Image (cartoon, rainbow, N blue to C red; front, side, top):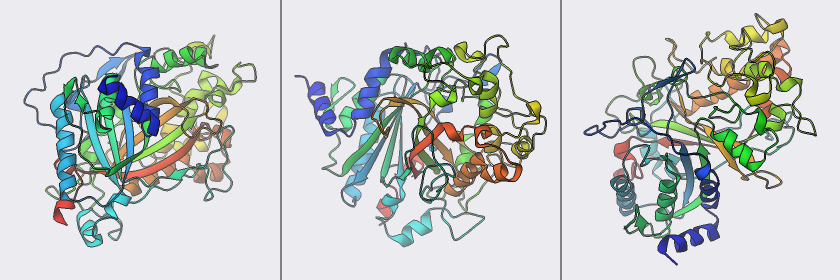
Length: 489
């Protein structure tokens, strides 16, 4: 038995990485990796903003008239808890491990983009005065830190939301308590598998004998989640798995729900998502040169998608009137007016309409107007997912203040009957935890729904999504990515 095989068996036996490794085996071979145009990054310094990888992937291109930019096809989110308080020797080990990964694999889609972030449980292990002095504070509330723990969303199943339930996946949300989050991104699933095994003790990296990090039991991996994002990949996965809604998935869409989420206009520049901000916006006390200036908050959520409800399928798998393209496009975007009416002769087959539509900003009052029925079809009171999000997601000049890095998943994590289900593996980079919490409240827009009598069946995507896990992390600048602040203790 070779080293990789033995290490893989050990990992699967523990179960800590089993979900990601199994999903990589299931989804990885489904479609050939994308052919990317050559990109000369020689001499380009690696970004201090860890997630600022736009200059290292193919530039934006036009698909169906929409400017889009696709990141790596596969992303593994690996959460971990510490078994003890780390010391400076551990900081050196982690720094060396991250450097070793990048020395053996190019910082590119064909290689790997590794990020590492830290939850409040990690910072609670450090002197409180040090943490309070170094993590930026909110400009709007100087007594609050930019990093706060995640809270249940307004439409999450939770004791805090006693009136909220879901049709099929009525799973209460869990606020996780991980110390670390590793985010690994690559076009090549074998690269991610290789790195996961190496972190677990395989002693092999990119075909060479490379000693695995000597963590000495410091890390206990608590979950692994795979995200895949490529045009047409959800349809291929659904067809291969025999999912009843497969014929209704848009064949070119990179997302389960059929509408692309990679529009250039929908994401801000990396700098605006950091604590130090940019000329368009800054929400914290951070200044250039501060310890965490190029840091950010990374929110990680795990969502089960009710695709049968999204397509309004009956017991025989036939879509209903609430599953037409014109309905679904309004739930995703807006109703005043809908960005497309789809195919007039067939609203179901192959999605019933286009996947690539512009993420247009119509002002912060767009959701309220549609909630009142202004310029909506039939003057119905309804709200779209993107219009409610845009109540607070942009700077005064219209620049988005977040970078969403979400995409499809397909696994059994948190599913009550343990069946494999479509997932939205969701992560986003924002300038503060408070910014995300506000954006999430506005996305649900329960205030507007109550004020203007918007039925739950006409409120965006809320009823189709069950968030089962949430946590906020601080993603530090690259220069402090290995156990930040530890050298100052």
